[in-house]
Amino acid sequence: MQAERPRRARILVIDDEENARKALRTILLEEGFDVAEGADGEVGYRKLLEFAPDAVLCDVRMPNLDGISLLRRCRTEGVDTHFIMMTAFGSVQAAVEAMREGAENYLIKPLDVNTVLVVLEKALEKRALLRDRSLLRERLQERYRFKHIIGDSPELRSVFEMIRRAAPTRATVLILGESGTGKELVAHAIHEESPRCEKPFVKVNCAALSETLLESELFGHEKGSFTGALGRREGRFELAHDGTLFLDEIGDVSPALQIKLLRVLQQQEFERVGGMQTLKVDVRIVAATNKNLAEEVRQGRFRQDLFYRLNVVAVTLPPLRSRKSDISELVGHFVDKFSQMYGKKIGGVSASALNSLLAYDWPGNVRELGNVIERAVVLATNHSEIGLEDLPLTLRGPNRAGGVEGKAGVFIPGATLYEIEREAILGTLEMVGGSTARAAEILGISVRKIQYRLKEYASKTQEEAEALSRPLPI
Image (cartoon, rainbow, N blue to C red; front, top):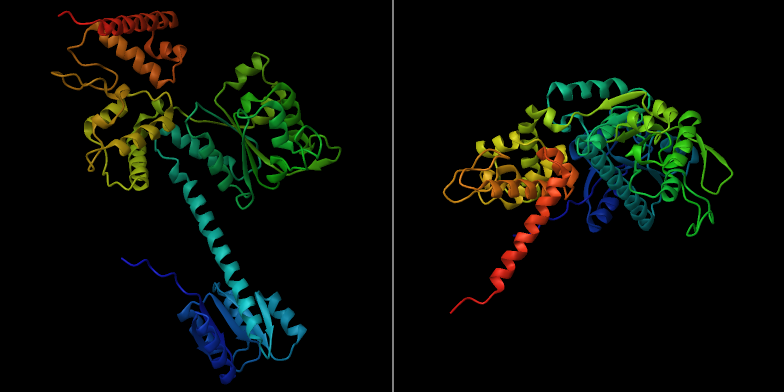
């Protein structure tokens, strides 16, 4: 099958001089363009609406409708194309007026072929860049529209209402919630719904960098301010000027850096690391944390005055376990997303699989649910739907011979109590990344008991291995 040929750029030539128009048409056809003609402004306007050109080469002086009047009409009616004006008079005034009305460039007659092609190529390149930028913005707006914060539970509707009320203001917003609840998505929504939506949205993860690197990342630095500072660098505050700065994991910022952040919030000014010049910025702050900042203040780990500055508007995201009515919709969203990503046609999930997903408490929240569905889509053998067998063991329990599969988290009959406990402990530890404290909390037992059992399992495994290594009796 032949690959589809890329579309050739369309050029409309509008000129009342027939010989000049035909000559230009011939040159452009030879260069591989699609070309249409208009003998005057009125004819050219009708052709423009029909042909939808990428660029228009238009004479300034024409009967019925002159070039500048045509340009003005197109701009008023929102016709999307690039105008390049042509004049035989070399009139600076006419050229300036055309540029003021929105012309991309102008050419002086008699035309030089190379100049025409260069000017035209630049106009087409600019149009392509603008189109790509427009498509990118549309995709970003589509991604961060409210409908992509999936759910319709009362808990989530209150979050939507808070976003709608806070976004149009310049108030600082503090987003609270467990890991995986979608704090960055809410920060994007606040920015996209605000008057600053056309300006930068800049983010920084405060927990991912050391204190020194984070200070440089936020405020920038001057050349030679520290080892490795080979030149001046603008920080995130400067990059976010007139826009929004998202400070993720704000609860992990060191006390020394908290003081500097407080100053920026209060006075909207700072100095780069190693610099003397005070810089003024206009930045809206949206911060997020999975920590209880009020408790951090009581423990002396977070400044009270900074907490008050950040906590002007607080948005608390509910964990997934408290809005399980949203799970079905989220599952459908993730199935569609990952089916498209991996080129599969999976229509949904089976009733038993959905019951298991609903029964689980989701300590990793929406992020964990997304990971589970992605894994299920990748491993699914039945392309019509995701079945219980496609879910991780921690959600469905072991499928032992002679038994039936039970609901998530409950093991089937036929296993000994020792086997059930072992599966529960090891499976939960795998789910929480090996944290005995978190596993103990989920299972409702002590950390010491988990540690004791792990030693017991290791010892038993070693005994079994030694037994297998012994020679069999003859």
